[in-house]
Amino acid sequence: MTATPRSRRLRTLAAALVTTAALSLTACQTGTADAAGVVDSTQPPVPGPESGQTPAEEETGTTGASGNAGKEATRVADRKAPERTTSCTAKGTEVTVTDAPRPINHLLIKATNTSDTTCHLYYAPYLRFDQAQSAVPFVEESKPQAVVTLEPGESGYAGVLTSTPDGSHPYDATSLTLYYAARSGQGSTGAPSHPALPFDSVRIDSSNAVTYWQTSAADALMW
Image (tube, rainbow, N blue to C red; front, side):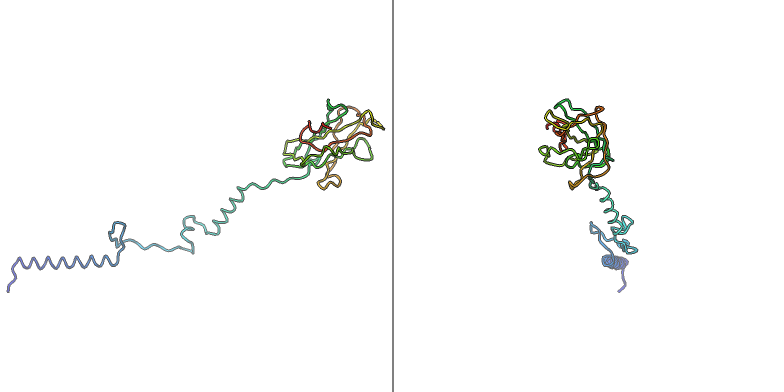
């Protein structure tokens, strides 16, 4: 039977539909789908890490070990080093001696921390007027509850009783030597200080005594 023009057109259309269906099936098998479900057979493969780097290392351009070391170094630098403390010495302090208006027959010793390091004033100052054979006795009742600590620029104080009407063996002292007590309480530490006296001479007798270091002048002059 001879095919009519119409039947030939129908066969051609059917063949085209079969070819299109086959191409669509092939694309589904080899491509990947996006969020909308559309197949993209041209998407390139994701490249693997190069030179042994991980994806995180590629973002920074450094290895993981170097990155961690850098972060740790930054943290260490940001942390403030603990402040070092030491005994106060003549090298890092300025000592002055003034006459106390009250109580009478008293001197006030002031030690100021002139260094850039916190220091401690242990016990009481060891004092020697002129060439005395022994240090001035401590006023034990004046012992504070805690060691006096001086930040840079801060001062500590000690009061000195020079004489009383009941004292014996009076003499006129013209010089003073001050030693800082060691933390152990056994002897002094550092070189001595030689502060000037407020007068040409100061009357000293057997009642002479010095307080422990205090945080204020008022506390130092209570005894």
